[in-house]
Amino acid sequence: MNWDDLGDELERIGDTSDRAYRLGEYRRLLADLSPGEDGLAEVLTNLGDDLTMDGQLDEAEAAYQQAADDGGRTVLNPHVGLLDVALRRGDDTRADELLALLLTKSRADQLVVGDYEWIGESLEEAGRLRAALRWLTIPLRDIQPGDIDLMPVVCLNGRWRVRRALDLPVDAYDEAREVWHEINAARPDDTQA
Image 1 (cartoon, one colour):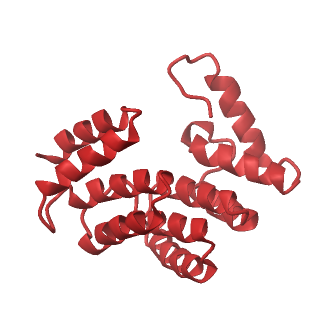
Image 2: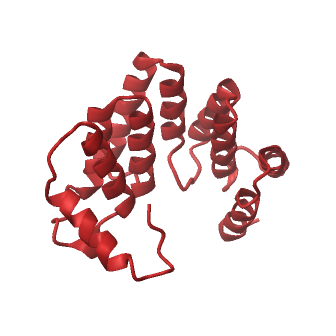
């Protein structure tokens, strides 16, 4: 199965609301993939996501770690999944180690917007609001607030939520978020978060 076909299959599985079915389907796909094979790390990361949401943190950690060790291509970085697990467990030492690793990856341009969103939301849920704000702001660092079309709205939305929780005043990026939503309100195909 090539990368595009795998993506279609993972999307089909992900569209199913039955978590037990999704877990079974991920395991079915894993049975056909070998270590180092393109797609293994991505399937393991998807498996880790569902295991995390199901509260199976030991199994999720193992899946994310296997994906990270495999080193294969993934849409989102499995180290972020490991961070999410550490934060859910309240393991601050492990979370800080992973944040340091992820910061190194960020500086090397090895993270995508979705990684920053996941990191920020995980930190937000763990009550680490200042750290969440930092991570949700990183993808905006090279974008001027007036460049609305370049803004990753998922980070703008998360950043806005965290800034409200911290009772911080509205800044230029908060204003850019409002403008983005005003501009896109008339577009029915865009998701408003």
